[in-house]
Length: 396
Ligand code: ADP
Image (tube, rainbow, N blue to C red; front, side):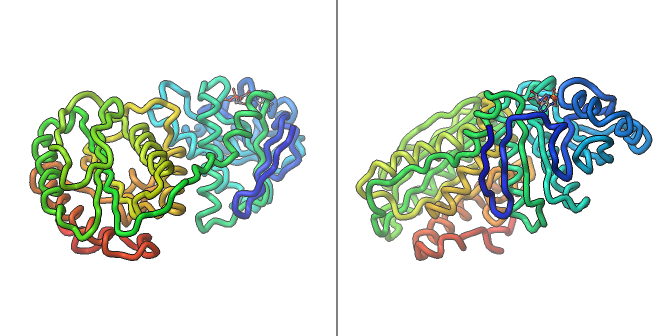
């Protein structure tokens, strides 16, 4: 079983087989933190590679290797030249940094490949055996890491091979490699129309500012009622789950915004669900809004999405909507590094904003949003990519 495709300059191969037998410059070992040897991938590599690999590991890395990092040794009797030992996360529930750690494993191994001048590298499905990472999520993270790596400025290995140990695992990777099916729109963009989609956090942490937040959204609607365009508004909130409130209401008719704070923050799942919902709605219309401004406001970190809603998956979706549909995403985050957080799921730094979760902070967000609504409305479709927060918006 074999499958091959091109991601940028990198040839990506899926292969049913044994990682230890790969004839590539570097193979990746799914090691443990003590680099002490084990079963699965680790056992196969040391068995076939002979004792030299463990001897070198003990000598060079007596303190082992932390989760998410990677270290290099020679490859003993193996056909490869190098073994990169990386330590995947033990999977608990997907809410304990597992995805970040797994992504880091792939990134660090790709970096080692560049440092060691490797043209080819083979990965097993890191962390999906003894460490229990669900393989369908792990596959998305692995492939996204390769996409991200090649879209940076990095020199890259020419070949990245994923070696899967069972036909089922192979099928999961093959599915993840297929682009998400692109939804075809039946209609056409209606000139001079804009859809403003607002996804607002209503988790428990909003308790102190919920009234100010809903008040500022109500004011925002009132002051933009007379924009020289047909503006519709879609509004959803989220806490432990996604809660649609209203969809595509003409701005003059929007009901009052209300936020009732409760529970936790399922941001990834809610953002994904709302984007898909809006996109599906527009796809079915004869005339869909020409411009879409999609705004996410939160005051806390993601902590409740179901595991299938990975950052990588949301990243692909936001990237697609931004590039192919020209949607303008804005992210407002309090009590976090909003720039870093938004970048992790595909919203550019120039479109994310830290704000202070108090009345003044929310007032400023309203002013910023008002300016962006006007800017989106006034600019040419082809210039939407340039809309971002400017110096005026960045003022406290
Ligand atoms: P981890 O402890 O990181 O979960 P494992 O070695 O237990 O690592 O398993 C990682 C994945 O590699 C699992 O999907 C497992 O089925 C697969 N696997 C086990 N042995 C091999 C091998 N020799 N070659 C390729 N993949 C393997």
